[in-house]
Image (cartoon, rainbow, N blue to C red; front, side, top):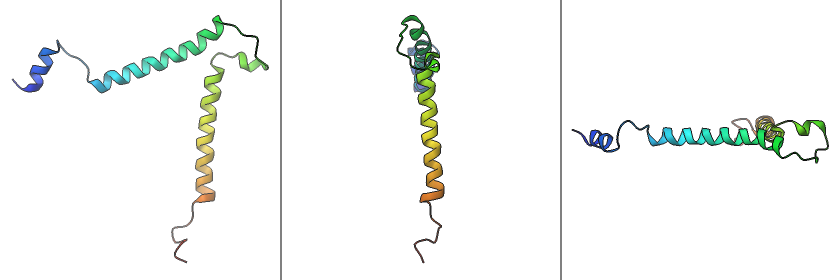
Length: 92
């Protein structure tokens, strides 16, 4: 009997590895936050929206995600075409 077999027997069966359990908990938390983002505004109505699209469920999350993607894409384009120099730029 190896040390791994003894550990499995003492833990009471087949448990997924710690990394897999953490990953599952992380995704379960994300799903819970996404569900709360959709359900809670429907329960607690607010008349503070200035535009009609602000009443769309999960508008804040979608807008934030799209903004982050736009920032990443724009910064990569700026880095590629404005900041990068040819390989022999400092040699000449």
